[in-house]
Length: 628
Image 1 (cartoon, helix red, strand yellow):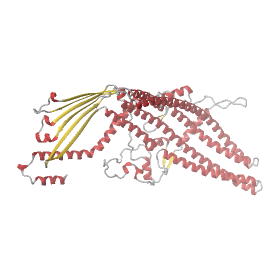
Image 2 (tube, rainbow, N blue to C red; image 1 turned 180 degrees about the vertical axis):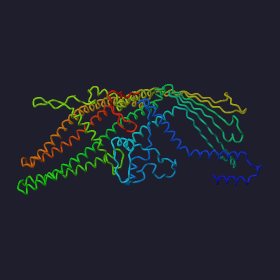
Image 3 (tube, one colour; image 1 turned 180 degrees about the horizontal axis):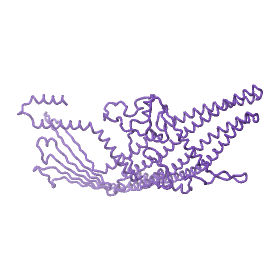
Image 4 (spheres, rainbow, N blue to C red; image 1 turned 120 degrees about the horizontal axis):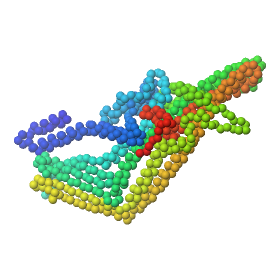
């Protein structure tokens, strides 16, 4: 701007003060002011529009959350910079392919980037309370794993962004039905040759408009025009300004709020669907995290059991070797012992490999690098085992006989092992994905009405009025230009509309079938979950007893073998039975817990708070979600 300013002064210094063209000076000042305004405005426009869009979308989301769930927690899609993923990448010096691995704010700004300081490092804490120390593995509890997953998982973030985008779409649709302010500026220069002479002229005008679209389909547009050249040369007068207004009102096809505001109605419902879908996803994701977490602990137990079994078989093989040397064991028995030892080693190596794979799968699920050093808290499994022992201790003993087999009963059943009909009704009341499908049936019904409306005749009333100043510098309504128009489009050919109308019925039938299919799927899932909880509860009792029997059997057989009263194969079989029983008990403990969570998920009664933590169903609580 300094260089331009100097040029302006230099050019002006050649003009005598008495010959300065008032119009030129005024016009140049106007151009400079206009350019300055544009330059200043351009610097903040992108940031302002982004922040305004965020503010309105957040307000809309809270409005709908309050309507649907009774509380407005909002939805922030901008993650803190200090996510656990980034902290691990840095602290553990993990390899990365590019700056994108550390976040959007770490990207090099490309040419013409609109906002210099955005995206930027966030000062907000990730809130996961996970300490990261260089060179040390990070230990995660189940609660922390759920929090980390909600903050770091790419799939989780995408679900949140989907809701936010639906809120932006709704904002746009609402904007279409609000007052819209517009501005248009034109500057026209013409040159025309007439009899060897060139005649030049220019024309500059500004127009400010205000429009409003109504939900019944009517639209009004008003504008005020300004002739800049006249304004700068002749001052303010009615000749400088002009105004006009127009109105469009559909009377038949496309008329009425039900039809004309369909796009707004659908945008409102799409946001509701996305909120329902996200809430459903949160529960599904949380159960998946718990399952993966428990799979890691279960596999860790299998590694421990496999290692213990391997050590025992090494001892057995050594003992058999010594007995064979003393002539007290045959070569066949020695080969059996060595073969079992080799198999045990292979099982131990396989178990360790499976464990590492399970850990990697878990880390990727919650959005952490697969090569990050992470340990899980075993106290989660230990607390489950304690609870499982209490359940097994209370379980009723099996009274089956060879003549009469007794199925597991409801004695000591958990609170979630409810009556089947009650469970199914509870699911129908709370499954948000079912509510989405039911809502889409109504959408399909509306589509039938909209397509039927398109079959009719179109009758539209148009009108406009335009005013400008007269020679007496006055606005005169009698000299205004008025127009009125009535357009009609008779339904002589509505073939494409007729096909669309027929298709709308097919779509309605399809949406109804989707509800029916989902109902059946829910019933099937609930019935299966109830059986799974009963089976897991009974399995706890059986496997607890099986471990006790296997441990006693192994100890007895070991003593008998040492006393020469049992064969080696008996000891090998006892060791295998003990390994199997221990692994089965760990699985039973986890299976019962997962059966409870899966039932709550499939019944739609497992809630997730803002931090991604489980809020489990209480029989005395009213967990029902009402569709507004």
